[in-house]
Length: 337
Length: 294
Image 1 (tube, each protein chain N blue to C red):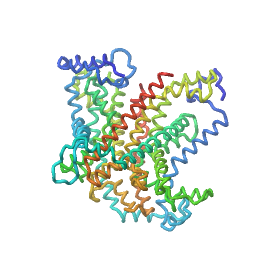
Image 2 (cartoon, rainbow over the protein chains, first blue to last red):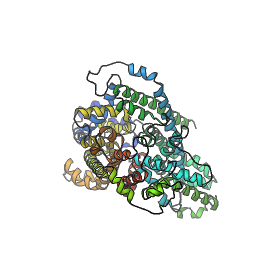
Image 3 (cartoon, chains in turn cyan, blue):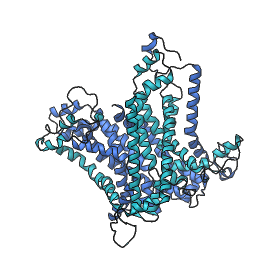
Image 4 (cartoon, each protein chain N blue to C red):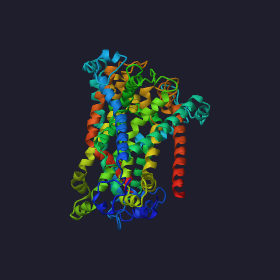
């Protein structure tokens, strides 16, 4: 994805080009090709403006980003190596990797971590398959398509808290529609889904799937609409069935988007908080205590800032590694074929 | 599946490839119906609950349609929690965040779309990475920083956080819109002797206006819906935003007064739903423009 030549071109024709020679040459951190006008023939517009003007334009956004985004991130990593606590008068001290050593033996945290992974994968994978199905349907010439598109957006626009509340109403053991439906169908009396040890996590995962459907569907739909129609029709003329056409024409075109959205979903889900906070607050007996809820309680209920920050670091590290493996594996799988 | 006859091919513009016969088509409609039910039923149930009188809510056989619809739940919801105050707080936070975000994001998005250099690269990198930002790692330092600035438990502090939090998506969308403005227009303006700033204000900005509005509305919705930061950063009830106040209906032991809860939740959703319906097409376009064109 890097393109050294393009990066090189940037410096010299700006007003203070000479000074920027050094900047212009940087090979590392190249940017995705799609970034500036993909597919534009000939030399790209030469009249890029100087770095000074660019800095001027970027500054209003850059300062808040540095102060409230990049800064806190570094600060947070630093906190993980301290014994910072809330409301303590004694000054905070560096304690090296003590937090991490404690964390290593904190079985409660690793339970929570396992639940977090179960939740993230349990939401992301079925959601991807369901969204793919819906996107394929919406890509057809079906009546009611507009209705489906409109409805598919609802979960996206809703506050997560409301999504949680709404599903609590659905799952409510007495007045909920789920148990009523089960009773109507003669499948027994239903149960208290969100407080049952066995059912709480699956019930919560179903809500997670529901809540994230729109983003995934919309992204996949956009990918589908971008697949070359001619190829599709050629394959159809050659007598390829629906499944073969999907595998040989649609999927290869869709794959980059599918990878990107599922990776993002995995991260988002692993970091999710509000839904489960509202649905179960981590109960029953910690069965749905996602790592975010765990860290939140550690930090803002027990005031263990340093320890909670260490949790955050571990979460980020593990998720990054898993994601890198997943992406590398998928990309390599694609090349082998 | 019948392959379409050759002669018809050019005429079939709107066909999307899969040509299906009767039974397959029926299966597709069935599947679509199943999706519709799955996506819609919880919301329908929320509305139904919101309009049910207490007696029906206590019944062991709840119905989809309230037998005697009532507005009591809404009245009670306003009595139980300071909903108006919370809505006002949410409104202030969301409007403030959306306006500031758009004002500072537009110039930066312009650089990201037009400039070629380290700066734009770094900006794009940040936009992508921040999508994966772990809130846990950021919230504690944010809490401490805002505390030092005496902005904890204030809407201003929350607005600042929301601005930064909505920037990645705002930048992504706006940069897409800038790229859609032909660079030739700007070059023509420059040839005519317009300065950089003139060009931006009188040539680019008007063309960007619809995109800017859509981005601002999206930032508004994001802030209006947000819960985690508001929960951590706002402590006193009269400062809290709508999503946080909604959780108060749940009570400590999780036993909720369902009617008012549903009524309040329904009301809190309306602004987002209305605005989202308004900008839906633009959002979905903006979100995918950058990713798809590759």
